[in-house]
Length: 227
Image 1 (cartoon, rainbow, N blue to C red):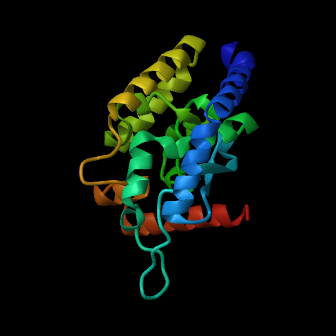
Image 2: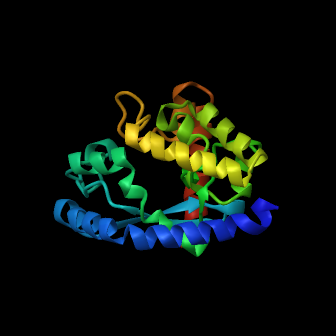
């Protein structure tokens, strides 16, 4: 009953209150992003939401537009500035997602919205995580976040959707606050940006180079179809 009737109301009330209360912080961060990284202040990225409907997720920008001699963007790790690292370490770059929650794209608590290029590498069972709205925080985030192996991260997501309840969400919210104060589990050692699922599966030999290329093409085709 909570998931069907009250969870969305809970999301609207919390996200609206948070946007009002945190508006001074959002303004200050926006000014700092503009000063350190330039425009645009908000970074938009297509992510799969509930029932794998693609939506545009909002985040504060944390990377520069640094390019190589051919004009191609450098890898994420090379474009992540010291300022951007601090934003990510405190999760302040995630605050604009409150707008996504208010709009109905996301929930306060749920499986984190992954990239489309991650989704295409998931098994049908793992893709059941998309039967609910993705969350600002989730069960996987309070149990390891980026230090988790992909298999464990997706397993925690499935555990959450099997036992959604008001008290479960409240517990995860308070656990998230505790993690933020302790700066727990922000990144895997030696990695400031999370490894894509496809790259991980290729690295451990779970997919072949041909399968990897095929699924990457599928992800690009899915994104091209909504633009």
